[in-house]
Length: 241
Image (cartoon, rainbow, N blue to C red; front, side):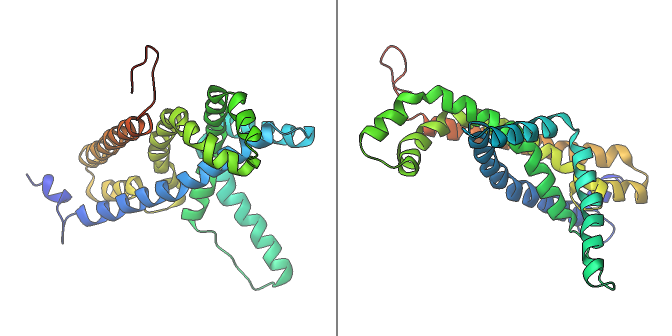
């Protein structure tokens, strides 16, 4: 019972700190995901470009960020970019000292990694739609942008939702990596609590349960969105989804 009191809210308990850490974890994931999706589309279009330098750079981008461990990407971005920015700042104003926010570093690093995989989701979804949809939209006189927004995108989401849903779950779990750069997310708070109370099992179990709950809630939301996106879609045999 004394151990459980460590998870309570108020003085003597770590409940408040864990709740704030959970808020930062969710905020980081929520801020990163739309950036990663936008980069996924941009990377797919770059990899499909008719200009070979753009294609080569896009493929190199995808290969590098799919090959590097996420934590290494985070550490390189956080420490090396901070060193580069400070060197540039000191060359202009010698007394300046700029610190990069761990939140921003985590957002950028995770966006780069998730978008490398997200571009494959976009590619598969585009292939599932087929070129006939683009040609039909063009025959109606729609501009490429309008055709994409009104004809392609509504169909694309139905095919891309499972892949993007899986990437969201991966992103939720990968946010724990930012604890190594001292962002007070859920994992970092748990580590601080363990160092103070010497109760690793209790706090690792607690945050493990929280992550499982987040993934289960995300899976339910994903299935709901998939059902919603499939409304009115006619399956083989003439049945409606």
